[in-house]
Image (cartoon, rainbow, N blue to C red; front, side, top):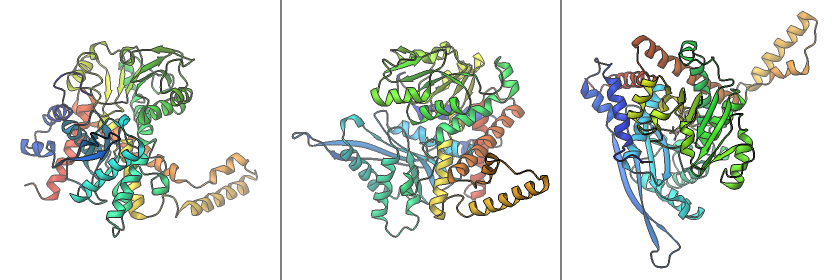
Amino acid sequence: MSSNSGYNLFNEVNKFVDEAAQHLPEVSPGMIDQIKKCNSVYTFSFPVEIDDPVQKFHVLDAFRVEHSHHKLPTKGGIRFALSVDLDEVKGLASLMTYKCAIVNVPFGGAKGGVHINKKLYNEEQLEKVMRRYTFELIKKNFIGPAIDVPAPDYGTGEKEMAWMVDTYQMMRPDDINAYGCVTGKPIVLHGIRGRKQATGMGVYMGLREVCNVKEDMDSLHLSTGLAGKRVIVQGFGNVGYHSAKFMQELGDSQIIGITEYNGAIYNTNGINVEQAMAYWMEHRDFKGFPDATFVEDGNMLLEKECDILIPAALENAITENNAPRVQAKIIGEAANGPVTNAAAHILREKGTIVVPDMYLNAGGVTVSYFEWLKNLSRVSFGKLERKYDEQVLDSTLKLIEQKTGKPLTEEERDLIKGPQELDLVNSGLDETMTKAYNEILEARNTKSFDSLRTAAFYVAIDKISHNYTTLGVWP
Ligand code: GLU
């Protein structure tokens, strides 16, 4: 999404890495170089047949970048968008490496993409594109449950992942772990409950942690907790929608603005997220939405007064051009790379708390990790212990009834329900997001960093450099 000329996501990420590396004198410049570089880069092109008797084909440019092999497999989504080029994919792949390190998910980072205007193709053609893309990765050994495991990203979802796993299985019928070659699959194809909403759920959990730190909220003159916080969400795709939904339903925050590429809605009294989504699904446009003011230029909402601004679309949304006018006290980076390095510095000066992408949107890859584990173990979470847990709880409750002489109510009895897969996924995600935030916060406080991002990169680089050293590939 380059609007400021010369923008390059990979360079942006590396500027942040260099800033954090200054605080790690024990890690050599050579090691920092090794960490920053992309280990394997695959650039390729293939044709797709179109309904034009003269031209007959479009040739599409495609990419897969494995940024870091310090842990295998590598992991990261596939983007189908016009913004896709090599630098974007390299930048996104590198962010995946730091992201996985932050949340202690044992993968190296990767990312892929196809430079494509999806609107030009019907479903059948898009299926052919995805199958061909997968086939090309298989030919070059760029995909596999132990090698590199793609997932959805902007412009792709469960359907595309289903085409991918099906293509992989056709080509590798003897791979017993074939379902683990990609995550974000539909449940019927061994996906996992909670994956679709995972990034948004992680955004909610991460911001909940941020807003529970009293001294940080005091410095912003805000109360602790999410309740009542005024939130603006940029982008109403899978991540933006679920972030807004959980902030509203679980955090009791007030969603005062939602933007899309063709306009935004704004209401200081709050917008009902489900109603906004129903309207969006019907019209693909917010114009005419009854319960809010329509704003033609969605970008204007980035500059409105609010407590939390959640950019949840593409990179390069907050730049040095608009950062001086951003009034949000907290920016929660649900997208990858929404704040440029120059903008980050302006926001730091203003005292804005920016919660970095590599932590805040890590819910997606965290639940992808659970899905991959499920695929390798071929059993869904909770299956073995659910009945047993229920029996233990039942006996405990009976004992309580006996001892107290008081029978429990139906509601109290409901407690004995053993956990379903979704309960365990959300519990694992919560544990992951909470623990990771504590690590970042501890680094920020002990090292007196001026931003959560520097602290997050510091923690990630420290872990990755240790991994390289223990791998024995580094003296
Ligand atoms: N595309 C997502 C991200 O940027 C998910 C990656 C994954 O699940 O592997 O984090």
